[in-house]
Image (cartoon, rainbow, N blue to C red; front, side, top):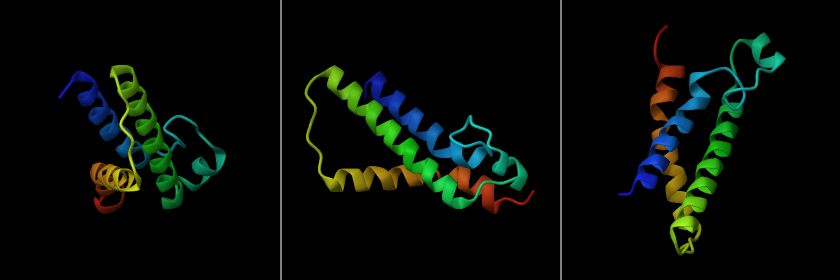
Length: 101
């Protein structure tokens, strides 16, 4: 696997866990309602997860286009990669919701 492939996998691991490891929106935007509630709701975390999936997908598409031919992908590819992204997010979910503090 090339360095670009390892970069995408590492970025996917980082961005899949980011919504569960902090209380800021998209990892950097502090919003007053988040600070008042002390915790983000799961809906916001899942929306962030979807946004980060799209960011990783766009970046991997750009790296693939830069390397050569871009292969056409159908809906099964995106379904499988999103499920893989959810699996990568499992450690952050466990840390956020299942571990005792």
